[in-house]
Length: 265
Ligand SMILES: Nc1ncnc2c1ncn2[C@@H]1O[C@H](COP(=O)(O)OP(=O)(O)OP(=O)(O)O)[C@@H](O)[C@H]1O
Ligand SMILES: [Mg+2]
Image 1 (cartoon, rainbow, N blue to C red):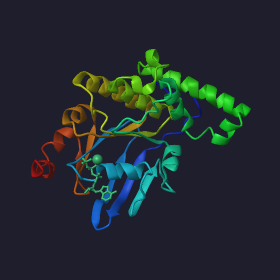
Image 2: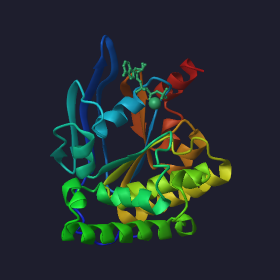
Image 3: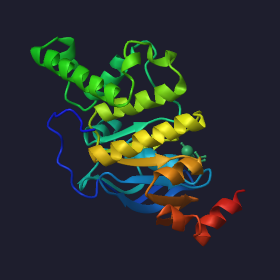
């Protein structure tokens, strides 16, 4: 499942470093000096009870919000400035809890947007129809077809993206992220709204993507069945603090993790 060759970035380890990250909303410390890292090809779950700071951490890593303190490094390079464009250009892509595809575009066109978002095709060259744009458009279509083929979406390439069942839309969002040739993909509740069979299929796809492309995956999901069967390591947050990290089998027995979950039950 190797991405189409387009001058990929060399992969160094770790792919993501979160260093002493803190986010303050007024008087509330939503993320409190959180540090963890993710290696290439690793699948890591970011879990914790409601309000633990998972989405806020995701928002920092993807450049949506600027942390109050701390650093995010992608392959050893600090993400500055903290903007979604910068994070994306450095190889951080994300999918959303509420799937965000463009309804007026076909599935292929949606996935081509991912290829463009790798930052190689400027709006100016697109508007002026410069020769470079024609070549980049061809490459984007090739990459979109490559990912649609690998993820079993080819039959729906020309369908309106939002006319498809939710399970396929989630796979399409993943294809769009992968078409951008990411170093790490952040998945926000990828199992939400999917039935058991769709969740199993998505887990299989995610595992083969990580294994075969070296792309790391950081997953937030409340479905512990999905998370436990998918991830190699868990990072556990509670009230903004990192309370434990390790392999899933150890985390389910960790006293602080048990207390955090039972405390909100
Ligand atoms: N924009 C904001 N302004 C003020 N407070 C916020 C904001 N975003 C999040 N919070 C608060 O920060 C804390 C962490 O929220 P966050 O959404 O990161 O938690 P979460 O772990 O994603 O929770 P959930 O599992 O419910 O999605 C919560 O107390 C939340 O109410
Ligand atoms: Mg959340």
